[in-house]
Length: 231
Image (cartoon, rainbow, N blue to C red):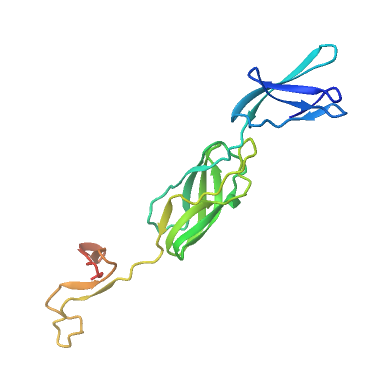
């Protein structure tokens, strides 16, 4: 804190009636003081006073908020369903306090596994602490997470910059259709491969443990469950 007073004067600083130190003005009457130990976080009222040679005391009072704690991400949760095959996914990001400077460049879409990729395309504030972040142009398969970058200008009202975050929820993205095969369980025709049979049992392949739906003429005729090998 800095003020102006008589040249070379001794200024006493108090908080709550107790001295927290002194400062000596320079030849121009300016002084600077840094509390040690540091003041408590939050609201502080400090009185600066000086008594001249004639026993006259002058004082000034300053009330201010002291905040050195950087904002943090308290949650980073998926909004939609997972797994999905969407081309865009949304996340809700909540900070520990109100922040400014939040933009698309504050975040990155992180490939946790697979070949999935996406681009942060939009950030919509819900309020000062909560933001909806959209990752667009999602391609590939795998696990996709949204991370907060470090040093991107996200800060609280005191100018403390938010710390990076990479522990949020993630989407499982699957854009690849399952490979399904179908054949007669027993082709009883004369060639054994002419698709003429007296046995209408069907068999095939798909994903392990998948439910396979069978239709004929657009209408369902039943379902089958694949085994652990997809058969």
